[in-house]
Length: 105
Length: 244
Image (cartoon, rainbow over all chains, first blue to last red; front, side, top):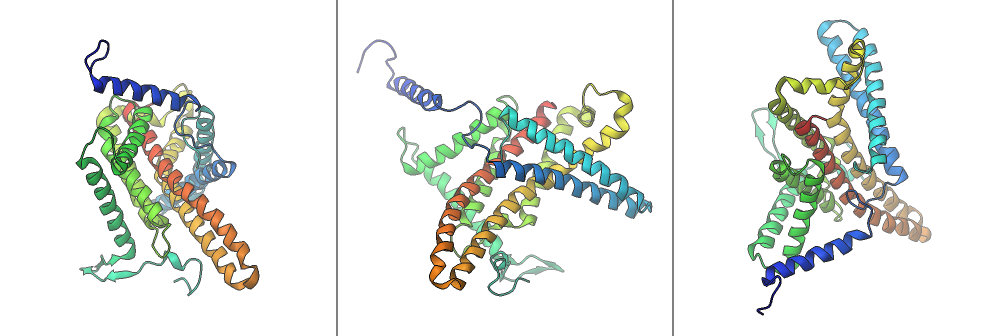
């Protein structure tokens, strides 16, 4: 096996592998993975973002009240902050889906 | 807690080897047993898969290489080749642990440790703390500019900054709830339909057919949720490394 061009068998194998991978990826849209976002998955994800931020906001408010003795103002203020943060997160999640990079789920 | 025959009975923690250190209960439970099995299996797969190092890989080596390339691609794509590679071992460990935890739970009579929020929350909290520390060490005081969206007028800061902080703090919560809720919902649903099978008598074939379909769906969900958990870890790490 002594011929011109890429004489190293390893280099030739590498080339063939690269070509095969390129063929494999041609059919797919670019982006990570081939998991298409299902409606349920998207809804679930956004719902979780909303609820999680609200819960964190409420927990923070409760902790503030507990240590500063400002009951019930911390809870009230942080409830609204949590709700706003939840909407920000949900918005960002939805935006990311349009870009195709972050995942469904 | 859960009654006998309840669909939630499968999530019961059992103490296999009771152990107490002081007043802390550190018993070896069925959850810990499954975690041990997962870690041992991952170790065996990777050790056996990379032992021969053949040029044309066999089955085991192919599996190990596929897992490696999948996660390596994810890390490169999301964190970037520069500054991303040092997190590869961590991201790979998280992916394999969650994936094996999810998948082992699909074996009948086994236990899904990822269906317990304390497990997923511990994982997510670890990721969160790590991301925060990485960002602090890399950027120092500049890290806190992350809490103020670029271009917003300065008088909005009293409203925007708390919102961003709450939004940042909610990351581990949403990360852990997503994995735990998906796993628990799927397994509970299958148990509920399995319960119908007995009570419906001759029409029991119908819930069985649904369960077969659900099982296939669960196989997808296990892989997808492991993927989602890992890719969100990558995205958070990217935020920490590049700070938007």
